[in-house]
Length: 549
Image (cartoon, helix red, strand yellow):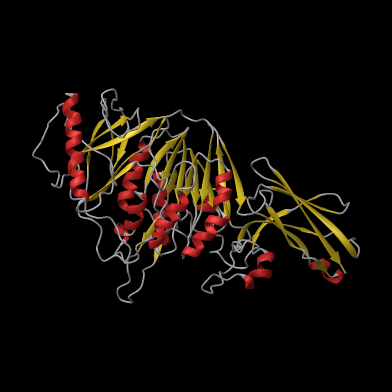
């Protein structure tokens, strides 16, 4: 019986090789056939029929050769997903799943297993089952029609230790519009990403900046990272010629796999969502259409099934581009998304899109969150900063300070079984660069002191962050938290230009603190000391020397 399985495997490999002469296959998995508990050797079947049920096996690949060998067995109760359905493998590792004409079959990674990595470091956990193929009118190529879909898919997994502690790099908005900007990313950000020794990385959308032909060079950059890279689709990853949201990310899928999926790491269930709802090409004005935040029907159906396999008290981390937050979703659609999360008690939402740093607690007042479960949100900055804006530093890399005053950079999450610590890493700068004194500048007139406040930007700060201000030998004063535009950015905004001359508008910063200047302070040179106590337990201090004249 094992011999027949291996023979069938070789036969399907033959058909895949024949298909490669016609159209390059989107996946390298070999395959074989099993229905129920019986084996059928269908020599004459050519796999060109369009099936409504896809069969497959998930197994432990002990020797890592991507083949089922005599000493290897299927894995039971592994979750397998299409774009709208999730099933479990049976006791022998086999599964059958309903599929559509164009579909993606993927395995939801258990915490104690891992996948081989593709050349771009994306895990090899999916199969592009496109029997029709992507629309041919796209400017950027989508997925070819697969003329030899295997009868049964073959998903190898590798046993690994379930980790209690692990580190994740959160990479927001690489968003490179040209090859030159890819060089900026490689030179200005990648070295810092490599220093963290992360267990895996998450790119939070806007991998490109509309020009999807740059994906191969971006993939080459990502291939230098150690460990898996999980990809999120953003609004600048959309095929803008798409007529609607159903085919909006065909090029993204070709390079990186499904745009929504999940996996388990340690004690955490990670869910990647596509929260970009594209209106489709505006044919009346012959231009790209608009978009809003949203989760389309098939994805919502899939997410509901996915969470049905997750304990309500398990930690769930959602990774998406557009934040689940008022103003980015239409109110009814936001509440529909929230409803899918109703039963979860421990959620962390991680986002890109805004090119800022922000973190908050989901409440009714702040985010219209209607449920009792704990839900934190984090906008993880941007590695492109404010779209690679000038001025340039001494290494000829754009400073690209974000519109909220935070530097370009990324976040690192250090997970344990029960908690996590977050750290913001400014790109190309000392890790200690965590705050900036925005006001005063180097000189302040004595007559203006009654109207002058000290303003500090703590990049990873939140409302509960303690920030202390000390003048010379005066007692320390607790600074007051507020929202507003960073005065440093107001002063320097005219310097910020993208490669094509755009001056990004300033945004409200959610991590500013202010304090008054002592009424009896004298003219002369003074030293200002600011200390911030961050939520990760770190204490950071900066100094400012200024003159009152």
